[in-house]
Amino acid sequence: MSEKMGGQEVDVPVAGAEDYVELGPEKLEEGKAKIVVRPFVIEDFDDIKPILDSLREGYTIALINIKPLKEKDLIELKRAINKLKKTTDAIEGDIAGFGEDYIVVTPSFASVYRTKGAEEIAGEPESSS
Image 1 (spheres, rainbow, N blue to C red):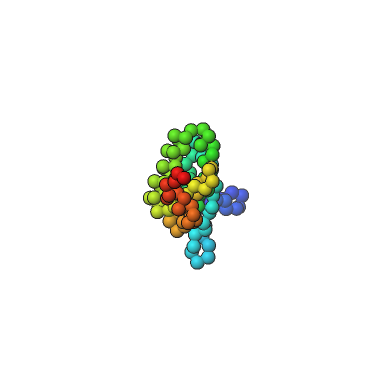
Image 2 (cartoon, helix red, strand yellow):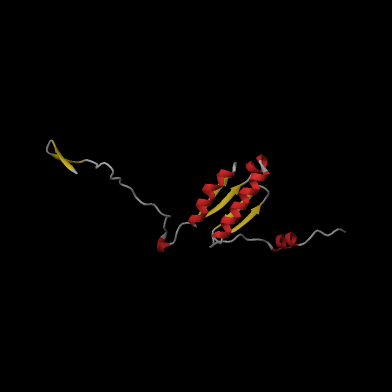
């Protein structure tokens, strides 16, 4: 809507009409989406919601520091990890721990490299000599 004021046209915003731009994932050349490696920290069970939302979008590789929750409440940590595992399975992604305080979660197009030695050690029962 325009009004005449002092010989000049002025645009007056209409109530209820909002100008907005719909944002999606950043696009690179040839229509490929930009992948983001994003760090997260879990201090409480509720901190996993933004992680899950980012993973469901499909363009985020999450590096998650679990140390604060691990020091605070092991039961909540197990609950959070189980929720992350379920979401990872649903998006056909991959999840793995590295070190004692970090977890990495990837979308379906990426996987976490695991050394053969680590798989063998994890798969073999301890032998008593």
